[in-house]
Image (cartoon, rainbow, N blue to C red; front, side, top):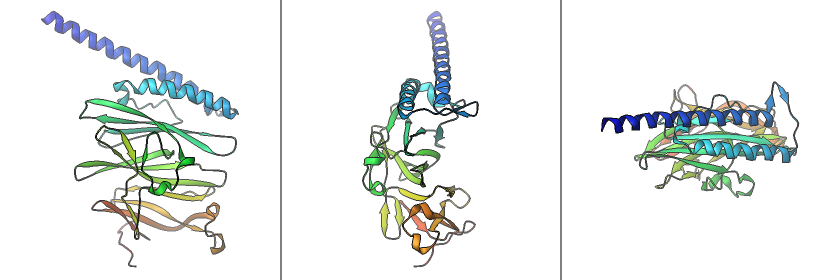
Length: 284
C-alpha cells in the first residue's frame, strides 16, 4: 500500500513538472511571436495585415493550448509584454486581451476569459471573439464570449450582490485615427460557468445601460477607474472644445471635472461633478 502511495506521489510530481516545462516552452514561443507581431529591440517591424493575421493565428492556437491546462491559471505570463492581464481579487476570474492595429487605422481585439469554477472544480477557458463592428446599440446589448465587444482590459473590480459575483471591467479601444474610447463593462457567469458581458446596472439619470462607452480625441487622455478611497467609479467628464463641436468626438476631451458612479442596491448610479474627496449627488 505504501509503495502504491509513493508511486502515485512520484507520478504527480513528474506530471506537474512536465506541465510546468510544457507551459514554459510554449510561453517562450508566444514571446517570440508577440515580439514579431509588435516590437523587438525597439524596432517596429512593418507587416502587412495578412502577415499580422498569420502570426496572430499561431498566437491564438498556442495560447489556447496553454490555457487548457488548469495550472496555467496561476501563471502570470510576466514575459509577455504586449497583452493586458487582469485578475479579480476573489481569484475566480481572469481576462487576457491584446489587439492588432491594421493599415486602415482600425483595431481588432483578441483574448481569453478564464473562470475558476469552484462548483465544477475546474478552470474553464473561453476564447473571446470580437464582433464589435456588427453589434448594434452596444450600450444596451447582452453579449457572450462568441459575440464580444472587443477592448483591451486594464483593470477589474469585483463585488457581490445577493450572493452573486459581479465583475466591473475597465477597457481601452483605439477605435480609429481620430478617437479613442474607454469602456466600462460588467461580466457575470451563468450556472454553466459561461461568461456574459453586459448587465442593466448602470443608471444615468432615468436611463439604464448595460455598458458605458466614452469616445474622445486621440490627442486627449481620459482617466476611468475604480477609486477605492471613495468606493466609486470615477472618470473625467468629457466636453467638446466649443459648442460648435458638439457631437464631433474627435474634439472631445476632459474639462477638469469628474463624474462618478456609486453602487446603490443593484445599480451604479451617476453622480455628476463628483467631489473625489467627498462625493455627493448633484441635485436636479
